[in-house]
Picture 1 (cartoon, one colour):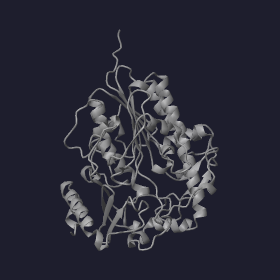
Picture 2 (cartoon, helix red, strand yellow; picture 1 turned 120 degrees about the vertical axis):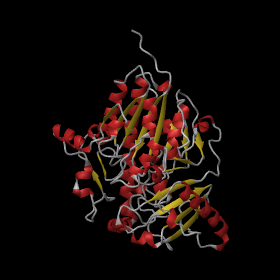
Picture 3 (cartoon, one colour; picture 1 turned 180 degrees about the horizontal axis):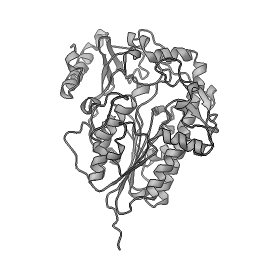
Picture 4 (cartoon, helix red, strand yellow; picture 1 turned 30 degrees about the horizontal axis):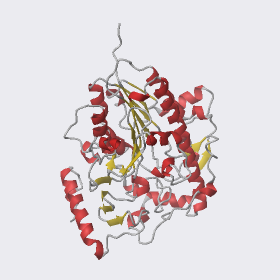
Length: 464
C-alpha cells in the first residue's frame, strides 16, 4: 500500500499570550533573548508594525481564527464569547488538512472539538491534576492567591515568585509536549495544521529557576512613559488597572523585578519553541512547513501608569507577527506593512493555495515574503475595546492607525491623537492642538466610516 504524500505545505502556528514586541531578541530593544523566535524571523519576515484588533485574549484570538473584527463575529469579551465559526481551522480542515490544537483555546467552553481533529492541553484543570499525580505542586499559578490582588475581581499582580517546579513540568512544557506528540503521530497522508498555544508570558510572573534569575533587575531601563502622565484623560485615572498599578507602587525599582522575570518567562517559552521546531526538523518536515509566530496582545507593565492591557497604547496593542515560509536559509526581512491579526487567515490561505473569501476583513500579506510591498503604506488599521463591566471604571474606545498617526475616540470621555514617529511613547496628546485639526478630522472620518461599515454597535453613539 502506497502512502499518499501531502502536496500542500504544513502549517505550525505558535501563539503566546500577552507578549510585548520589545521582548523579541532580534529587535534589540531590551536585554531579553529569544534565539528560537529570532530564527523564525531570520528565515522569514517580521511584520514590525502589526497590531491586535482588540487587546484582550478571547477577542484577539477570535480575530486570528475568523479573519474578522470582533464586532463582526460578536467576540467582544472573555466571559461570554463563544466562537460559532472558526474560519481558519474550518478552511484548512475542509481542504484535507489534519487540524491539531495544543494549549490555550479560550474561544468558548466545549467547542474546540468542533473545529479540530485532535486537541489537548487546553484544560488547566487537567494540567493541575497532572502535576499533583506526580507529587508536584499545582503548576497552574493562577490558582495561588499569593499571585493575585485583594481587589474584586481578583486578577494577577506584578509581583514575582520562584516556582518550585522543574522547567519540564511547567505548563509551557506540558503544552509543548502535546504539540510535539501530535506532530510525531500525525496522519502522514495529509498535511497538518498544528497550533501550539501557550498561556505565558501572561502574568502571574511565577517561573522556575534558572529563568527566574536569568535577567538582572538592575539592567532594566525605566521607560519614558512609565507612570501616570500629565494631561492624561480621566479614563486612565479612574481605571481599575490604575488601581492595580497604584497597589504595586509608582517606585520603578519595584517594577524592575517584574520586567526581569517577565523577560525570563519569555526566554523559557522560547526554549520550548526551539524544542517544537526541532521536532519538525527531526520528522524531516522543515522544508515543507510554514511557521507562524504571534501573540494575542501586549502588556503595559506600568506604561501610562497601567497594569495589564485593554488600552490602545503601543505596549498593549503592538504584537509580534512572524512568518517563516517552507525551506531553509532565507534572509530575514523586516516589513513595515500595516498588519493586523485579522490578516493571518488570508495570508495563510494564499501561501497554501486555498480559496479566499470576500467576507474576510484582513488582507493577504504573503508578498512581503518576497520582499515586495504587501499592502499600501496608507492602509488604515482599526482596534477597539469594550469594558468588561462597571468595575473597570473605563469606557469603550475605538482606534484608527494610519501611517505614523494614531487617533483614539473614547465614548463620552475624549480623544487622543499621537504622532508615533515623533512621539513613540505616546506622551503628547495632539487632539486639541489647532495645528493638527485637519489630520484629526481626516482620521475621525475614516474611523466613523469603519464603524458604519463593520456594523459596530457604537456607530449610533458616534458624535462627529
